[in-house]
Image 1 (cartoon, rainbow, N blue to C red):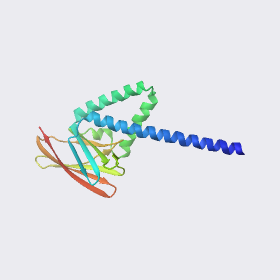
Image 2: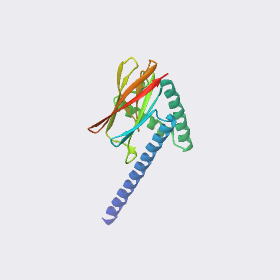
Image 3: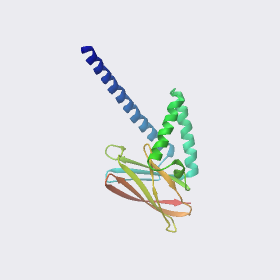
Image 4: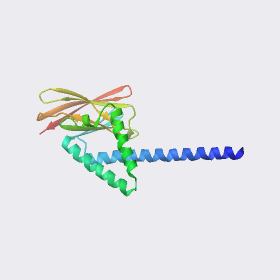
Amino acid sequence: MKTLITASIVLMLFAVTVKAQHMHHTEGDQKKQKNDMVKMMGDPVFEQSAEGIKVQVWLITQEEHKKKMSEHQKEMKHGDMKMDHNKEDMNHGDMKMDHDMKHSGHDHAKMMEGTHHIMVVVTDESAMKEVENTTVGIESFSPSKKVEKTELASMMNHFGGGLTLEEKGKYTFTLVVKVGEKIVKLPMAYNLQ
């Protein structure tokens, strides 16, 4: 009986250790992916702090977005091969990303619509980590005052979506960030040359 109890305790400790290592590895991977994504996008076009959250926004053409994503995927696959991951792991990661986008009500094709891609990162200013229970939307006002409302898709560590910016001139935006029950509205502007 003592052997059975001891074996059970050893198995439970082993399972807890493996789970903790997996969680640490997963958190580290997510931070690395976020840093890689931010590095890939360059400097944000807008950055502001309000009510304890920091919001960073990148806005690029869909053509630039496709090119950057293609380069990023090549780097990830090259990095995975260096780390000796097998193809099933890479496919599993792709399926998870695809599942996350579909789960949030958005599909990849919809995110590639429009002329521009917007990426938003929301972090807790005090803890400097991703804010939980968040949604992000944007209202776009064209130079001729046409209004477009877009709900951004939640991805692994950022929000993204497609915008249609066809007119030359100054666009104004209202970024609507909902954290739990709190709503923060941030105005920003962008000049399309």
